[in-house]
Image (cartoon, rainbow, N blue to C red; front, side, top):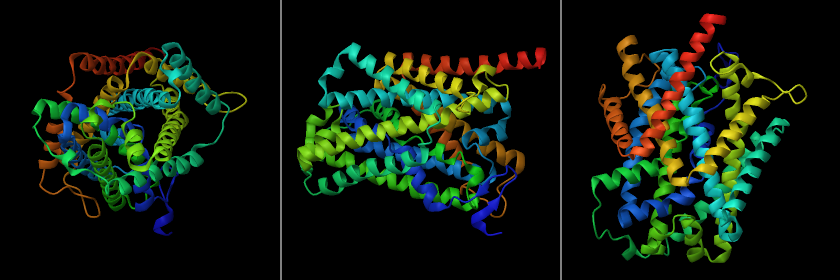
Length: 438
């Protein structure tokens, strides 16, 4: 049997190599955040905003070195959930899975839906009206729910189309914009405080998160001990280069005005660099990218909820299958209702911060899982990836993640704490139910 068609104990086939994994990481990470965040970060740090990308890149590098080692040792499907569950048991795994589907997927979808409305409002100012905005969000989530309940298999087509639609305008803007940058606008005339850097990095982290989702099909990756580290390096490096180029172009062309544009800074940058047609291209590309990301999440994440309900970890009603369309219709309906509710109740920044906090807790769990697996099972064996420097990287990763989490406001921390309490309560309720009636 060739390496490209390795079978697994899960009944899956290992067929995903380095380039497909790297491309999938790029697609999963580059979403709505980069269309909105350059202005928000500039409003906090001014010309020093570019340094926040370096902070995030450093954190991401540390975290995904931990993912690379854990992924080379725990090769079954599940990604971060599987690594944490393997190291710390089913309770920690359940909390991690809840943080992934609710804290990250639902809240990030709500955040990018808000970003989608704000982007569209540039061309359709009526969407700034509260009632019209609310109606649009309800219609958007309702449409996505109905499409997926009806069983429309658009996942693969949306994956390809979404990747092309988001990358072409962004790469074009970065490539052309670098030739028209006013370098005087990049001069750092004051140094923000460490606290300002922390707040900005926490918000910006929203644009870097998501690569862990691409590792969920670990059971279908060829030679994961080598492919996962190399695929992560390829994907994250490409993302970092593109992000830094876009922030440089936006700051270099708009200057101080960038800090005043927190709704669609790249659209305005494209207007300056490429003209009105460029702004239209970015606007269309951004909306398509956001819609594609939402569609993909509504297609895939309810299946996680369905599986958890089927395994008795969530209410059994969420495991029902539509008698005609054979889709997990209750789980899909639940997902879109919760996502829409959050979109109606929050702003992009608030939702993005709590979503970032959720995924940072998962990253903390993976970093600690590396330490736990080494202490329990020894160092990685032959053919498995091993982080150099002993426990330095996972410990440093954990410390930096905790520092970023400490930058949350009291309200944001309360929201994240409520999410954790919900996960614990659901797990304990499930235990009681199974012991009493299971």
